[in-house]
Length: 295
Length: 280
Image (tube, rainbow over all chains, first blue to last red; front, top):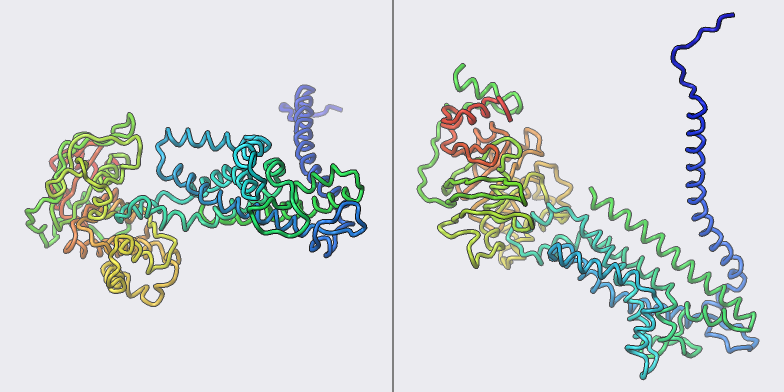
């Protein structure tokens, strides 16, 4: 039986098969790395939820901090208030400054100045947060007293590069034609920025700020030396050291009392839910405003 | 083939009214006042020279068209006239642009004030993402012309032949308008600050033929009140709307003169080749 010998074979010899195998292997490795990232997030969320959920209750969210070793379980209301004050003040400080820097970089700076300032902002972003904590401690707390003001300045330093970068990105998306249209009407550069560029960019800038807030809410190191000795009850006054979630998680996790460990897990769960949800919502909003501008 | 037929033969590109330059009745107004006196203008972006030694005079209350193939420097040229190139860091220039005798690039000249007097309408309609009313009212507000703002807006929209189409929806977003309406809104926006000159940088290149015809009619009306310079790569458009035409090629001004003459009896071989569609 004479089989027809095809002149062209597309099946590939052993070398081709080997290359295909290596290709599959590399693809599988890369996919595995991606799955590990997703898996890690899943494991972190799951383990914290599992250990923290038992303690969660309305009372836990609304009561004052517990007295150590007392049978009364207490709650974390002062931590929520304190963290909100700290992060809120930090946002109020970092937002105008960050947006101002972004406007300078995108609208006014010469290319050389832009390079220099941008590098400084990026370096600030890479600064270890414990260094920020030590810096603020040395500058404002050493020889004085712990205050929430000092803590919020530390957090503002953390937020500043994030807000600057995200605002810059949104400003760059505002079409050049919009700026030229305004300039051609005899408007000054500043009026153009104020009247035409900023209104278009506002949504994106605000969502970038929310992302930065979510990030700052999880910072411990900048607060550790400057607002860590505080009372048990709700306090809104930024001139005092205020109870706050991250430092308290640290304190509880170091405590010899197992009940404190439970509280640390539960507080971690609350903090994590806040951070995850705000980032998720802000990212969705950011994607939306980016799409709108990109049109 | 007569010159006339040559022009028509080149018209196949544009689905517009037939061009009949030779029979245009009105002759350009015999204006003597020079608005722009451009002398030896050379301009470059970094190492790329975009304009070489361009010199011409632009008169008051006439339409001057600048034509030429893509990349001939016509956009660079018109953007020099209101200093829109100031923001391009690599831009530099030589020569003088006298505006009513004052060098636009001279010492102490404020580009913001230059642009207030010399407005510009761009290639793509670029209304602000605001309401129709606010698009027109924004610049007067910024410039402190708040008195009689409503009348000013209405007049500007009338001036841009847009009032009847938008008078019932002034508070709607400008982005809800069609492309042609948006471009007329941009003209209204420019007219609202009452400049002396309006520069049009290929104002119809993004528009359909009907919208284009409306803009062209509008330009014809606007020249009673404004000095107009229009850049276009559509030579039929230049033939229809302009009184004077400048033909540019590879950064040089090849020929400048009355539109009727440029299109019927060009002096330069390159002009003739271009308007007859041999290149471009």
